[in-house]
Image (cartoon, rainbow, N blue to C red; front, side):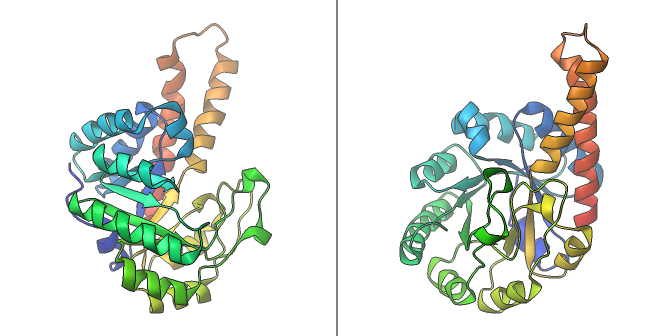
Length: 275
């Protein structure tokens, strides 16, 4: 089913959060769609930097949009974390339903300027645009709490007013790709950003957020939660076990059956929890 309205905005005002999952092939994309169909809620399939290194955006768009349109629930296709304006434009032209321009490492005024240009271009094609303020570090790159730059509410207010983007990704204590531990969400910062900017908010780095904090995020204006590490880990762990248990098996489809089933279970659990 087509992503024909702003389901993230709708969720942000209804004590729900749309799950966005990084995908790396038709197997995990299919698992996530089936999980969303089982839960009967919209979902986003996201293409990050790693996936873009393996397959061109134009091919991702053709594959995922065709799968999304065959779904019984709304499925969006989202470009995740691109700091390159031309990459964002390619995704818009490739049929992605939403795109993210991550100008968080740029000087604020430059971030606003480019975000404003891309928002206009995206909206002309009926595409939603996400921007980011602050810095959400990556744990697998040796970054941690010291690298967090919290979103400035004053900057959020100006970006919201000038850019008129659809969604704002925020840094409120979250960290990308945490495994085996959690970090607390700074709800006071989140509340200040909410007061400053009326746009739906996006939380990255869900693997490092406790269930308790995820529950507390639902009544806030967070409308989208990004998820990648948990799905990648369950597929990798289950695939490793399958290969060790079946050393003579060479058929990839057979080896991938249990990993994809496990991914679907994790996706369903997350989607239902956030709904």
